[in-house]
Picture 1 (cartoon, rainbow, N blue to C red):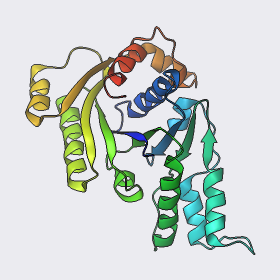
Picture 2 (tube, rainbow, N blue to C red):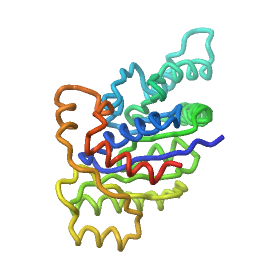
Picture 3 (cartoon, rainbow, N blue to C red):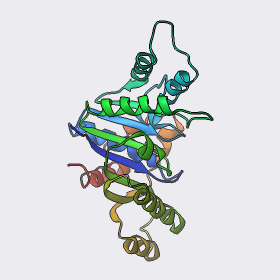
Length: 250
């Protein structure tokens, strides 16, 4: 059965990965598990938000296969399957896979085909899929063939930030990913967004879900190396995020 999938995107510095971590916490605490979390951002740090140690990535497995680093007596398919399974980090109510850095020069066709097949097979074991992407969303377009139920774009309240978010929404349409709903959330909000910014959102016709306030506890957790997903329940950011997730999770 196809999982309910939520993909996050946004330019750097918007707190997108923190929002992804809080979404995973929301799903787990609401009993909507197991969740498959995919870190498809080349600057991968979702594991730090979740407090998980990652020992390998799918990109590493692809590199090794391309270079022919396969033990004697083992086929490439078996080797790739073994490496990919080793790249799955287990959490409480969820599993995490990290895509890793983009490939270098040369043909990755065979490795990418195996990688795609692995993901397609893997997702069938999970009712919910959360994918944290960079703004380009290459992994959505290239490595998965399934439609995305919700594309959640995270931005700040600046005019430039919102314009960047709207460009991401346009890119999703161009890629023909098959997005069910494209939604916008404003994060790290110090004061209500201006009328000028809200007009940009309204004119674009994008679904605006609300705002998540700036929260000093998040900065304190980050400074002390504590997983953001462990924010206390009284956290204003956590409460606002959960209220937003109520609107996109069936």
